[in-house]
Length: 510
Ligand code: ADP
Ligand code: ADP
Ligand code: MG
Image 1 (spheres, helix red, strand yellow):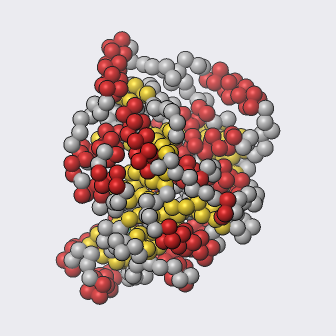
Image 2 (cartoon, helix red, strand yellow; image 1 turned 30 degrees about the vertical axis):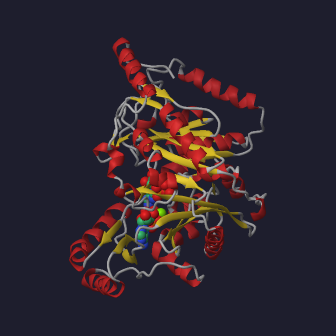
Image 3 (cartoon, protein in one colour; image 1 turned 90 degrees about the vertical axis):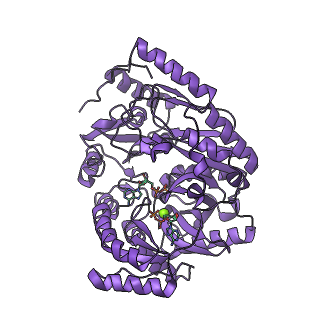
């Protein structure tokens, strides 16, 4: 299907195609491989940029609701894979068929969608397409939290007490009750194949366990097509600390230091920091070395993340390995200078890692905020369906934006609400916080409500500034929700401009 031209775009489809080709020629580079990006949104844009920097050809795919999305406008080739929503992006056969029809050499899955689906990695391998990520076998073993725990237990990696998969029916409930009695509540019921912060339940009593056990199973079945659940002892008010890992196919595994992702809502990350703010350097080194050991125990290749929980006595426990690039990889890139996506592509093509552990230096601090089209005051209700009438992003030293929306873009209602990630880098922690505050104030998005004013509250909150917070942070600070949506003069002005424009006409040029 040809790429329809949205009404706000002044360039015709033919001109756009011509421009794409002209740009490829101008880059003057040998287009070596064709790489398809099986994703959308900001991560598709991020990956396409890396592919083009390497001189390869970037192929984007899109469903109908994404017709006007930026990733297909910057890709060298764009393939429409179906009306969607979501089902076509997730359709392994369709994605593989599109890749084969376009003679694609490799596929980058991004995060979410097919990224952690071992069947997809296997389908790529079966069709002689390089999957940019670990092998299907590794994804399959680590995607199962119980098997991952078994591998880690064997390698002597510390972790919280937990069960195997609970048996079905009453036997499972009885085992869960026995675990509660032995280890004391609270405990956590977790979907064995869960992810994205979903499928996790905190249980505080026998009564609650009896009520929620079968609900947890059926919810796991609905969300992950697998009703298996298991139990972990809860680490009370932990810090979420994770380690970025990179491993080539020639036996070399290095870590790129830590990130703190403790600022979460419903087990989903909102603000991410690199490196973690733990002051004990010895402890940080130990956690990083443990992560390398964990990756090696799992025969890990390509980029991945080993997640840990750290309790108030500075004990740390393995949680899981994410077998893909993470949303928050940007903070690590800012403090190490290493382009993780570029590295992923090169390693998948069989190259050796060009740096050793000693070459990796952490410089300064980075903070990322996920700017979502959501209304935090209304339980983070998504604001999809609205047009971004004004979009003015900040610039300056140490500022990075990874997004896909632009002025005039209507946010599809059917996908997640992440609009743009803003990452800032600074030499000290306080400089980094100050830079983030300035950038949030300078960011004007009009149309949908966003999480920007909420983040402005966080950067001014003393506990955040002190760097000493854990996963209970958002819960502990209800005052963060007490703000005005017109968070700055810039945004007030943006609203005003939007209103004037709206009266004049309803469309905007990119
Ligand atoms: P990150 O640490 O990269 O933020 P998340 O766990 O938040 O990791 O997941 C990133 C994206 O992938 C989110 O959009 C999330 O909804 C999606 N995701 C993660 N795991 C799954 C899964 N098992 N099934 C579907 N989507 C998932
Ligand atoms: P997902 O695959 O959905 O990312 P994780 O196992 O990584 O699931 O857990 C997500 C979040 O849930 C963690 O960052 C943490 O805040 C919380 N969590 C998970 N397991 C525990 C635990 N045993 N004790 C305390 N918090 C936990
Ligand atoms: Mg996790």
